[in-house]
Length: 337
Image (tube, rainbow, N blue to C red; front, side):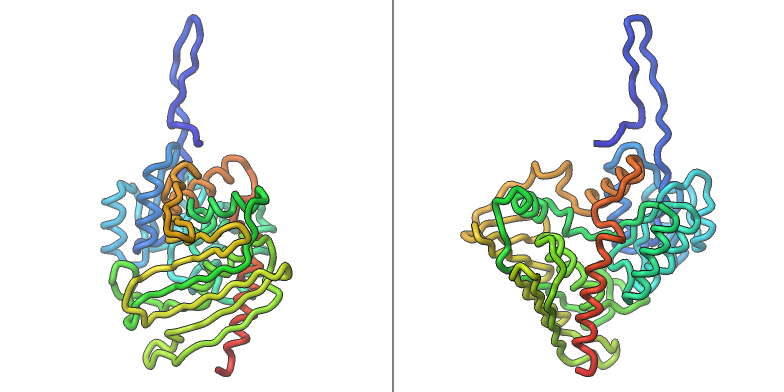
């Protein structure tokens, strides 16, 4: 899918190899998801992570050593100023996403930011404006768009073989303490609406090709220390009539993760990350849907391809703004509860 680091020119008289310079990237973040991106990038030819920007010196140095990254720093400006950096992947705490993404774009670099692109609608709108002003690639890491299980469903919808009647989604974790995906203390607080519901809101609107016309949200008691709702129920409806019901919890003691059920006019399908089964729990082979079964790798490949090809990526800032607008409407439903 992407050029290899070298290519050979065949001739009746001469065979030479031409070195292709790898695309240099800067990774911002040293935590769980930054390392997932670094692992994924190792599978993509013609790419070099030339700089790593972190928040904690020891962890940043360890990540740089593990992934053979020549330069690490705790200063974003220093990372952006490294020679030849073309694109930046932001895997930092949610409250930093919008401001850091703007900084990257204004430095002339392309940017992929982990979800959500912002945790306030005004910040998301400002980010879209800066991307349009600079003309650089701006992309959001909406993994669900790229997971082969969801791609399989999307391809059948596009082919006119399926129409969604309802999406039933459960996002369940056990997070009564402020820990990250590796069980390490977080410096920021996660959120069921702006972080976790963001995945499903975007996916539902992406799969239906419509923006929610009706929304509702309910939340349970707030955590006494973290100040966030630990349980939430969300409903969405698009103009065509398809509905989405989403249940979220930080109180669920297993099984953990997000589980999607697509109830369609022509079958029912359940997606569990990269696995897909039909309504009778029969597995569906999705191994040939994309070049990888790793959703994060597929996101990174799309980002790199969009830069190389000078085009808008799938999950661009502009495309994902409608999800931010819907989340803002849902947040207003929760005010005063």
